Image 1 (spheres, rainbow, N blue to C red):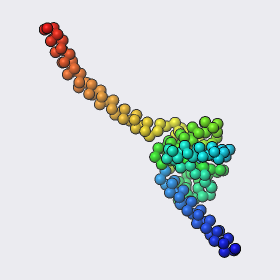
Image 2 (cartoon, one colour; image 1 turned 120 degrees about the horizontal axis):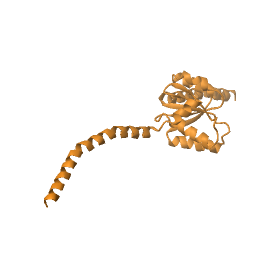
Image 3 (cartoon, rainbow, N blue to C red; image 1 turned 180 degrees about the vertical axis):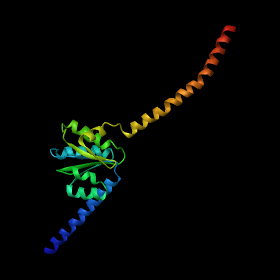
Image 4 (cartoon, rainbow, N blue to C red; image 1 turned 135 degrees about the vertical axis):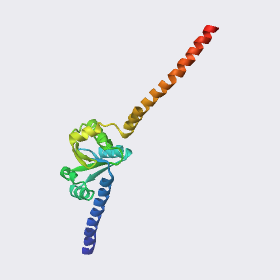
Length: 182
């Protein structure tokens, strides 16, 4: 019986180390993360939130602050440590910088939880709740790419129109002369 308890006790630190390493790896490759307070959410609401975030390629993990502190230290994100107070869940995004903030802010508004988002980190910089809201208002990567494409395409379309105008005018002039001669 004592051996079983010791064996179980020895397994817990190893499991915690694995959890810290896994979280540190996620934090190391993230583009941004948002810290939220999940208190007051039902299990069903948490599952709905997780599913929405997962659909956007965002991990949502409930973390113990001591383990999150160790993981953030391993990932070189000491700025995150000051925000790890109280019950904490992290929405970790890897591609779109604004996606975790945008989705959590939308969820908080829809569920009347204005205090749900506590802060975050983007590109190694700690963000307070107001800055996370600003980040949420940034357009998605796809929208930004489309806007950039539009900006790049407009001058080319204008140039094509300018180059085409003399030919179009010449054709119009020749058609008018032909109609006049007929």
